Image 1 (cartoon, rainbow, N blue to C red):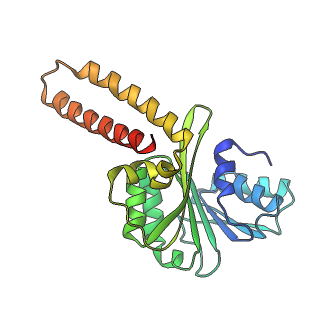
Image 2: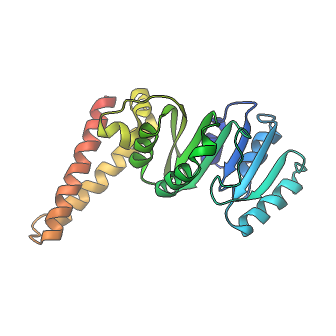
Image 3: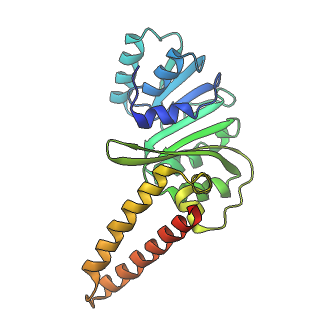
Length: 230
């Protein structure tokens, strides 16, 4: 199984020999890759929609892994039982949906050892949610795959004490590592926001003034993050 750069990076965060659940599995690429490479002994591929789940089943059978990967129709973690898995992957969804799944599945997720999360948006909200719900981010990565930037994280039960907005927005561990991909992302974002400021200058409308202030604030966060990694 050949994975995209994004999915490979997510897969590499899963602790070896974990019992895995992949929520929103789509084609079951991550479970197939991890079982094929003997990284995990067993996996549950879960999706809320029948179409993706049927595709997952076909892929699993095609790779001869029906004995090792189970499929379940599930809204988030609803079909997961207490103590059934060690590692939960939630990748490729918006941050709001990730938080919804974690909130609604909070009881069963108490028994899980690690969460591997790759939200497509609202990273600050996800990190803040983890801190408020006694999860600690212990590993982070960011990759550039086909022109898009993908941050991801591993969280375990524990205490986290982020207090700077840039820690929530960009990831304290990525900042501490002076992650090259994050540096590239910040450079790109800075240029984009600077162009937006140019278009807003001289516009006296209330909406434009509000947007100007928001963009200036984003640029301030970017500059603080870049200084932090200097």
